[in-house]
Amino acid sequence: MKTFSRKNVLGWALVAIVSCTALGDALAREGAGRPPRAPNPGEIALPFRKLEVSAFGRRRGEHRTLLTSPRMYQTFVGSPPPEGLDFQREWVFLYAPGTMPTGGYEADISYIGRSTDGRTLTIETRLFEPGHHCFVTQALTNPYVLVSFPRPEAVQRVVFTHVTEVRDCPSEPTLSSPDVEAEPE
Image (cartoon, rainbow, N blue to C red; front, side):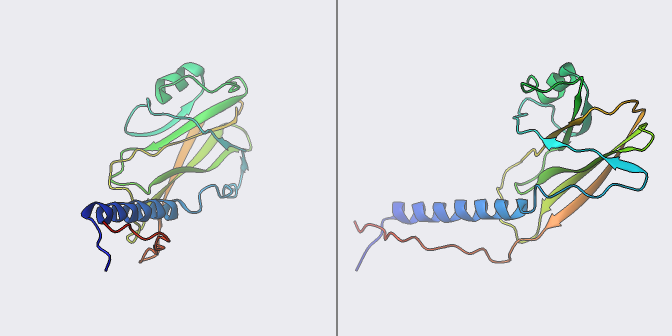
């Protein structure tokens, strides 16, 4: 008969917990990166790209901020703009929904458009929330997203719209059993 030390059992329990949490966070993020929604009547959709940058020095709290200069970028993001970002040709938008109670939340931009007369810029933010059955990190998180898009001319007004979407996860996560048996003591 094999005996298992408490250390081995606790080690496997920790692996199972971390695996469930990672699986839950991944399932809660499923669907990210989908194409932007169709433009509203009288609007032209603008292409945008997600900036893969760290914004750990950014201001905390909820933000929907249009960044139109390197100085604004530095102030709100907490680091200099990435190389190649030209504010004469493009702007950056920061969406941060604030501090969330767990992992599994994701900030997203689903649409940027301008009116046909060019005077109104519309930006739709989206917050994905983990569903009831999602296994998520049990820690405060601060999701955010930064996107760049072509600088529109003659903008006089910016309209923000927002959608919150709850993602469901399977009610029972599946774990694969390890192929390696624990070593007897």
